Image (cartoon, rainbow, N blue to C red; front, top):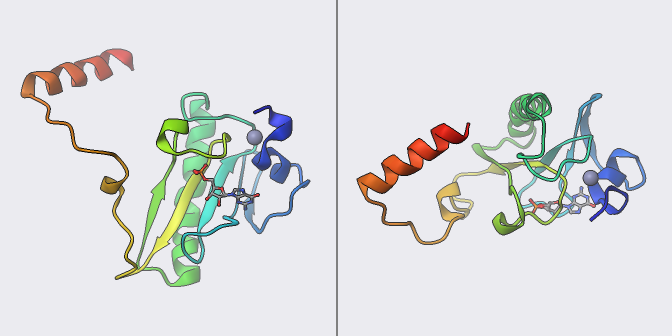
Length: 142
Ligand code: 5GP
Ligand code: ZN
């Protein structure tokens, strides 16, 4: 998808309306059009980056700062008991809009939702050696 076809770029440009709750030079936040809970909010960089890997660290840090600030605002606005804050980062993880966005999903006692542990498939059975190798590989890739 090119940036011209990107729904969230069109929201940034004002070509598609949104219920905007925050905007500065780098980031924007608006209500999700198909909310999983009242107050479900999306935070995006204004520049088009598809995934966290593509996003420069300073932009990602700014987006996270906005997530942090809005998380409290959203919780208070809808009197939530908690929130789930997450990125579907890439198509295989279920990302449907290919413009980086963090979700703030208000959670309520007994809402029937699941924790973030429910998003992946079967838990892998990894040996201590395999865990050591993975940790070393991540350390080497930094
Ligand atoms: P994803 O699965 O990519 O992490 O989530 C995309 C989110 O964007 C969905 O929760 C969906 O409801 C929301 N969304 C899709 N199109 C629009 C739109 O045009 N406006 C707004 N405000 N949200 C949208
Ligand atoms: Zn975009």
